[in-house]
Image (spheres, one colour):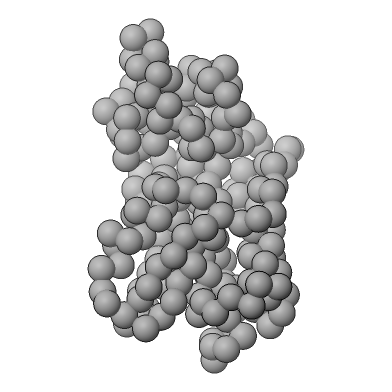
Length: 212
């Protein structure tokens, strides 16, 4: 049995991964990294920002795994950022409060935007497979970054108020959850839904290949 750690605080990512990996050959646990999450950079493509943050998370995860002596075979880290509809160099991360959530939803209202997700699979020193990124303590990683396009309806005042009161924006890049409350007001135009939910599809394909 392959022991997998999802190093993330995202319940959505964990629920999706558990529902996707329904075989009896893998055991999935989830817990957030102890290290603080890096803030998005400025002035560079959001794709690069997303991948850079994912690499930082992978390095933090490797250090934490080596220090704790954890026994997992595989660790998954991921990062998702929403690209500002008007500026590809501006990223929308997780809103810190209802004011910033309101500003993000108003900016996305009636527009299309691109969502970037970067996912790293970290290979344990005890596994024969080695990734392209060399990390701490003998860990290594492979990293994939992909995007999807989402279009929002024009949000009425009532709809906006409902989304904010539901608190479905908490912990979500761009202040919305496509698989939750915002799903009635947003549509996937291009790419895979899993990209918007928090994983690069190619990383999931690689994970399935490892587990098969």
